[in-house]
Amino acid sequence: MAAVSKHLKLEIKPRIMLGDVIAMGPGKADLLDLIEETGSISAAAKRMSMSYRRAWMLVEAMNGAFKKPLVEASTGGAGGGGARVTDNGKAILALYRRMQADLEAAARGYLAAFQKQI
Picture 1 (cartoon, rainbow, N blue to C red):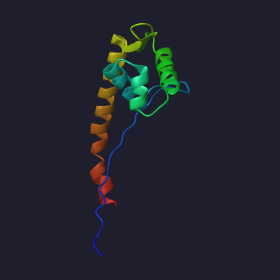
Picture 2 (cartoon, rainbow, N blue to C red; picture 1 turned 135 degrees about the horizontal axis):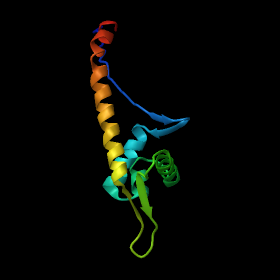
Picture 3 (cartoon, helix red, strand yellow; picture 1 turned 120 degrees about the vertical axis):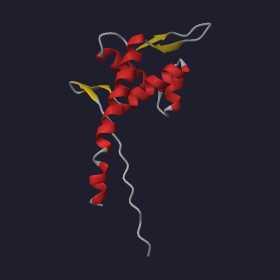
Picture 4 (cartoon, rainbow, N blue to C red; picture 1 turned 90 degrees about the vertical axis):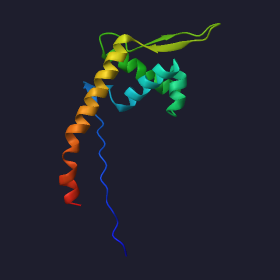
């Protein structure tokens, strides 16, 4: 029987906590990306296979955790509603993504040591 190759994969999922609340994490960052892309909390939620209610709760949690809102939503009407990631939201998202990349780069150095033990 042939030996099975064991390839390690690194997954870093940092969460910025404010007390017991996740102020920013990988899911919220992905939600912000999709709100920016689609201009809609509803469309972003659908793309993430989550309910609108859940997405709205995540947006409210993010907005409540930071001094300035990360997302601004407008109500529907003749032109329909929508949402946009604020300048502060874009800055927080960029900071989170940089932190995530830096942590992954630092942790990658440990994979070879783990691979030797498998």
